[in-house]
Length: 121
Image (tube, rainbow, N blue to C red; front, side, top):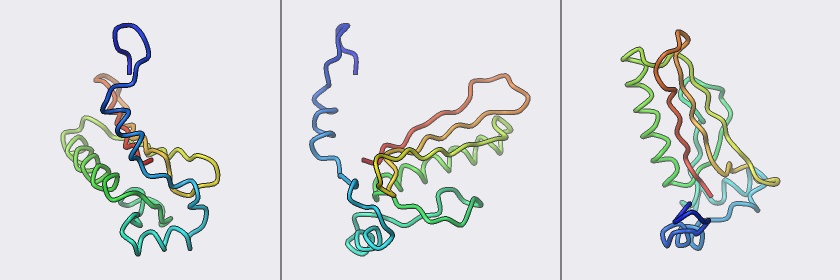
């Protein structure tokens, strides 16, 4: 976060970094399923109607993902977007994405594209 022209993390950002989960050791479905049973991860299909692959998110990230999917549905209904990309970003060998990037726009152009990011860990 930029603060007074320099890079200074805010207290909120520092607190988030200190308590953010670390899923770097989750490198297999077995490890992910164990955390699903513990309630620390949620198994999901990354996007409704998308591939049948299973992904894993923290419960908070899953709530944010559902929120954005609802927003995107409304934008489609209003004909403001007609294409969408959901781009997971990974770190190391972990199968739990670090973040999900949502990008939506309309083929006819105009309007600003929709962009949102769900931070996971």
